[in-house]
Image (cartoon, rainbow, N blue to C red; front, top):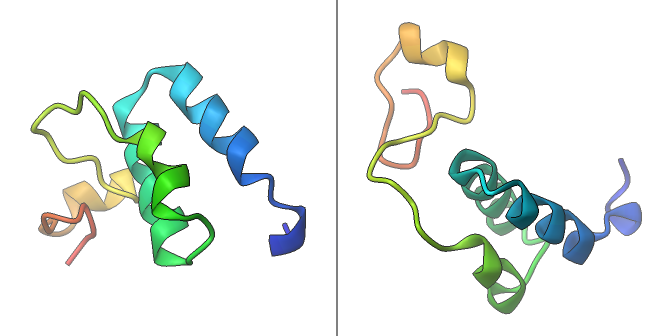
Length: 73
């Protein structure tokens, strides 16, 4: 997908509708990491998160330690 084709507000809206913390966390992380959204745009993704970690690559959980950012290390 090309950056100019990315519809960030629609993507965020869909993620919020799913009501799944892992989806919101992963999307927020990637949008921030690649500078694809402003902090104001990302704000709806923040919310009632549990204190658990959701790895970006769930299968790696079996292979390595996961950092606080949810990244395998």
